Image (tube, rainbow, N blue to C red):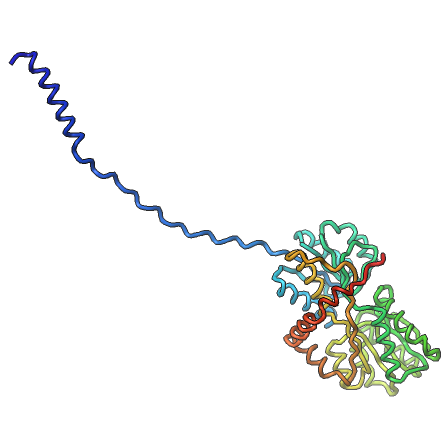
Length: 359
């Protein structure tokens, strides 16, 4: 075979071989295993609003009941809260606690501004940081608070005075004890007592500083009634007089009408024993509950806050209605249910009857 024929044949053979290779079935490409399904990420829970509440002290059952009410509102509204305060009456320490809570970026702050004077510059200075300011158990005129929840203090004083009249005292010496005379709520209570007594010119009423500590409160009343054995009635504008009268009255060899503020257990027991004639309650549970409730309802739901004073009715307790009140005051579950029913019936009325601030 000539060389000229060999070359073309080689070329043709190469092409045929190449064609056979390309026509051969291709091996299947490896199939990648499907990626493992990733578990869906847990939704990140939205951070709950945080509210602070600063008390003026925790010396009595009254202030503990305010704390109980505030914490119940925190639970009901599902918000984070810190309800704190000094163990004993200490305004500088309470202010320091208020400032500490502000560092946690609260959605709102509630407090008991007692006494008012040192709180006024603090509330004005920190109004923007606090966002919402609600006060309870004593108003704070001249400050940017949006809400006050507390007793109608003049009406509360009138109830104290009327309880004395109802007990049969229409003349003679009546001693009024004020545990902190500079406090505005106590001044208004004293005013209410005297408005009632104005209709009885034979009553001689004198007001003294009975101090805001149980031991010294007892000493004040012991010394005062010993010096005035002709006393016809003693009135306590604060919570301390209930325990004082409970201890003091059995030791005296003379008697007089005793009326005091607040429905703490010692006072209610003293009513049962006949050592306290009457006590006037101001619903401290609601003074804790409502500031948190109104602030949280606004932050969570956009419900407008009451802008002004939400004034709570007073409650006069004597031996006649003691048992019903005693059950509520000594059983936390009964108290919770009682106040839940009270708010279900009265919350709208409390909103509608807000008294505007006048300062």
